[in-house]
Image 1 (cartoon, helix red, strand yellow):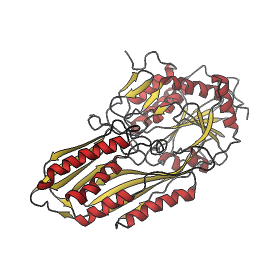
Image 2: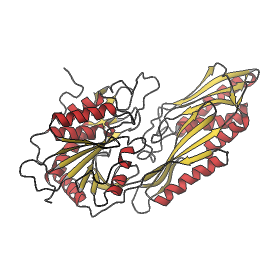
Image 3: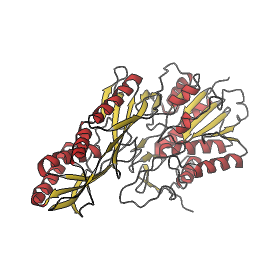
Image 4: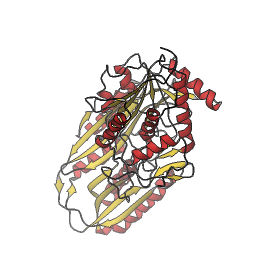
Length: 486
């Protein structure tokens, strides 16, 4: 049978990535992939443990002659971000991902690919199955619900792992070794509203912002990408003042850790202002496209006639909502003074959802400085407090403090240089890695994170660069071969 990865190397890793693509694995719904992993472990006669939270640990003994090496845990998460284009018919709970090769990239048809972190999982499985790869004792840790709550890492018990070295396989820039990451927190807002009837002589419209790249709210926050919620709100705020616009529904963005790619609103405008309003939106489209012509060439803003809605949001709440969304900070708040070109603090206006009685706004904040993380989170609360909204913070998660004297960093850096004859970059990442939480449970754990190149993570533009997957595999094997004696 033909495979989309026919001829790609290493064959074992690509085989398991194809297998993983067939298995639905949304965050908090990892039962099918978990069952697959348990069956895999049992089939290969490997010690397989499922902990109380649902994490899976598979242990493999050392190969002959490597028994005295230090034990290593390789770690990745089994859930994936489930994002699709609005015109794509796909049910992430039951439908397989449809990967394909285009040039130097692996992509998926209309959805996220799930290389984040499916390629890490596939690497672990190929390694566990192998018979001819030299390594000391290894543990493969597969965590659950990394993308929506870091639930698996939060629930990890401090006596489960036996290793003193951890290789996190969840980074997305080949040639870069990560030894630190930002901590994060979510700030959730709820604003109640009253329903009021639609007035006479009104025309209904939908305004839709689409075609944006989206991307990871940490790794991509400094790339000048557009936020669909911000763009749509900008239009609504001005149109309220110029064209007596009334709002019925605002729906934008989906995930707390993704930059909003699409947003739409259902509104009414008086019939007498219809032509001027339509011309205004088209003019705004051109102006905003010009502002983002480099970073968002696919931006599209449409206004279309729509049947009159059943009700409108009361005017006082509409004013408060649009003002608060306009004032809500989004993007990079501070760059690091210690690490060149490293984002220290940021915030993401992730989603705006209109429900039957209230509007729900989801934001997320990240910082490598714990006090700054709470400062920007409180700034978001302050903005929405002025609108009379209720806000609450999630529990948040800690950052991972860099250790430039790490032994496994030295091993990985030397392995990379030996293999590819170039020095890798050593960095911290402005995204949440499970290393921060694992480090809390295992303070003596020596950790490094690396991976192949993945672009557009958390969006349907997600793609995996094929040649970097081979380098990712080769580096992992070289590191394992050079782990020192215990």
